[in-house]
Amino acid sequence: MSCRAFYLSLLALSLTACGSVNNKQAQGSFDYQHKPEANDLVIPANLNKPKQTKDFFITNKINHQGPVGKDMDIRAPSLVMPVAASSRVVDESNIAIIWFDKVLEDKDLLEFIEKVVKEQLTEDEITYNYVEEDTEVTLSKVIEGSTSLKETSIKREGIKTAIIESDWYHNEIDAGWIFTDIQFSKSLRFRYQLLAKPHGRSVSLRVSLIDFIQTDETGGSKTMDPIDKQRAEKAMLNELIAAVDYNYRVQQRADRLTRANQKLVTLGKNIEEEPAYVVEMGLEDLWGNMPLFFENNGFTINDLNEDKKIYYVDFVQPDTSIWDSIWGDDAPVVDVNDANYQFVLAPLDELNHKTSVTIYNAAGEPLPLETLERIFPVIEKGLSFRDVF
Image 1 (cartoon, rainbow, N blue to C red):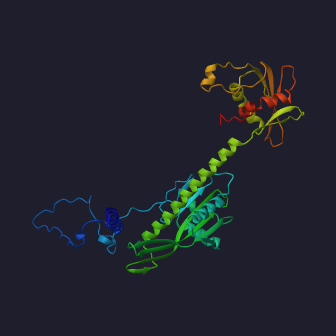
Image 2: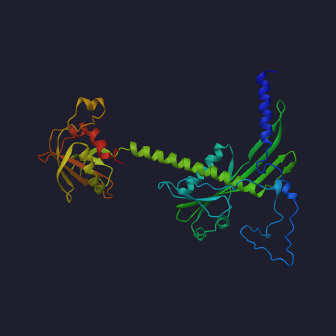
Image 3: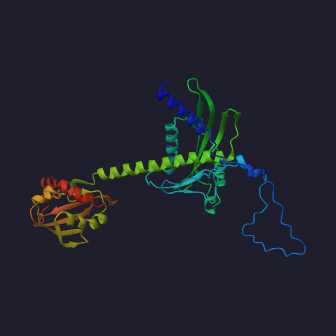
């Protein structure tokens, strides 16, 4: 046998030994279970009883039938982790349930969470099916996990539900080297219950273990320890919460890219059919942001008429030097003559979603389309306010 094979054999033995450790059980001796109780201190009748304090008094009103020694589960309690944006847990609830509040205004929250659940099951290569269940029953099951009056005040009218049941999740541990046998097998099936409040801005997700089969050297069982059941449900729920958080981030990134690539400024005409820029912004919002555009592009405001939405400006080509080009500080410049100009803003639709920006020279004539096309790259970036918002 080569040294490499010998070391691999030792590694396999060490992993097998580590795998046999019961992480539910404390390590060490359990002799304390068999220690006899100490007799009460007997005070002779002719002596005064010493003063006693109850600071460390242990009551006898405890569950004497509870687990002790090797049967005691020492693991820390499992928790639902609300890591997704606007998610919250039900206080003091042992049920694997969480509430999501609306984050993406353009998405239906129930459909979004439902899609995440289905995608997670697909990623885990687990088939699933929908279950039809009475809404009243589903609502009562959700409220079971609530100790908050705020949560139990859900109105039954208008609520929406979706119930998904998974196929089996299998977990097997093999023993042996050349010829392997299944030493341990555990299979679980889950139910995912979604409930949306009537306004649609809050959705609960509850995970329940509905089927369980375990086989080991001692035989088979379809009954799961209550603590293990709770841990399995909350572990599955936490996995879904993390998936919701990830999908939030993906969608928000896509929204940012859409806004960044969106053409907010185009060439068009004003209501007098004169050449103008068309900006996808309301009149008042654009009017308030125009000073930023002027400041960043070499214009100086001399006067304004807020009623008619006119800015009177001077334009002077900014000075640039060779050092600006070397250091990358030479920003694009509006290619027009140094002169006085008027920027006239006007709404283009009744909903005030679009605004025309018409540039007039000192003689009151609109700049021709050829000029607007030439300076469009600089104007488009400036009126989109990409470097500001």
